[in-house]
Length: 327
Image (tube, rainbow, N blue to C red; front, side):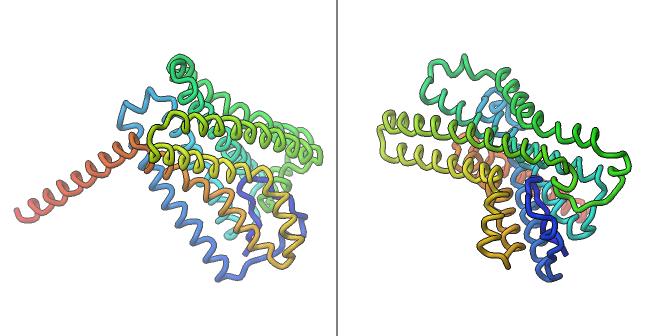
C-alpha cells in the first residue's frame, strides 16, 4: 500500500521514495481517518452552503460571498485530494489523462484558499479602517470580479504545465498509467523551476498582505473597542485568521519542509507525508466553520434557524408517519 500521494501536486521527493509502502493495517487506518474527516467536513460545509443560499441577507454582503466561495472551493479541494489519496492505495497507478485532471484541480483549489483569505483580509481592513468608504469600494459586483481574478491568478501559472506537456509528450504518454504525482505527469525540468518561482511570489504576496492588513486591523480594534471583551474577541478572530492563513501558506513550502524532515528522520517518510497532509491540507479546512459558522454572530444566528427548521421538519415527518401507521 502506498502513502506517497501529494494532494496539492507539490511533492518533490526522488522517485525511489515512491516505492515505500504501508502495511495493510496502517493503510486501512489512514484511509479510514481521511474518509471520516471528509464526511464530517462535507456535512459542515454543506450546512454552511445551505444556510448561505437560504437567506438573502448574505447575498449582498461581500464578506460572506467571499466566505462561501472559500467553503465551496475547500469542499472541491478536499474531495479531489482525498479521492487521489484513496485511489493511490487501491490502484497505485492511474491513467495519465485522469491524473492530469485531478492534479490540476487539486493545485488550483489549494492555491485558491490563501489568496481568497488574503482578499477577505483586505475586505475586513477596508470595513474596519475605512468604514465610510466600505460600501462604495466593496460592492457585490466587485466581489464577483475579485473571485474571477482569484481563479485567474491561481489557474494561469499552472495551466501552462498542461500545455507544455501536450507539446513535449507523445499522445501515447497520456494513455499510460503512472503513480499520480505532479512531477510524474508534468516532467519537464523547466516546470519545476517555474513552480518554485511562482510559489515564492504567492508566498511573499500573501504573507505581506497578512502582515499589513491584520496589524492595521489589530491596532484599529484596540483603538475603537471600549470594552475589554470586545477587544479580546477582535484579537482572537485576527489570531484565528492568521493561523488559518499561515497553515494554508505551508502548502507553498511543504515540499521543502518534507525533504528536510526526511533527512532528519530518514525512517519516517510515510509518517511525515501523512502528517503533512493532515496539517497542510485538512486542518485549515476546520478553521473556516469555526471562524464564520460559530464565532460570527450573524452566521451563527442563521445556522441555529437552519437546525431548528430541520428538527421541526423531521418531527413533522415522524408524526405524519406515525399517524399513517395508526390508520
